[in-house]
Length: 125
Image 1 (tube, rainbow, N blue to C red):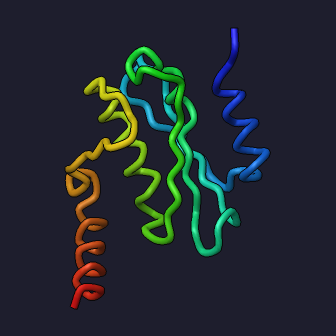
Image 2: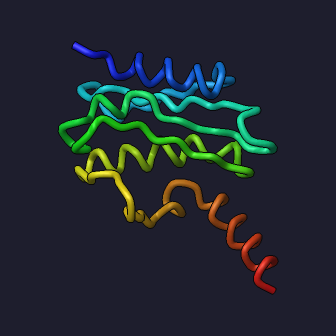
């Protein structure tokens, strides 16, 4: 049987290098954990966050998949927001794919949302 976690990690290592950090998220003792790996020096002035372990939820997600997110700010919040969003999708049995939008980031990190609103206000004025 294929170990998709190992395949994804090998792919990440080949194209992104070694992760500089790792956070582990666990929803409950019965459910597999999901790791958020953080990479630097992939894109200038950005960090790349990737999930590892989401592929264990194939029956819920409808496919073997992992998620990558590139950010150019909010580095302290990004992994936490990604981890919580992924578990929200798992618990609500949402198939992740093109066109999926999820609201409620303010429930995960209110300070992040306030900072983004301030930046948008400055850019739009």
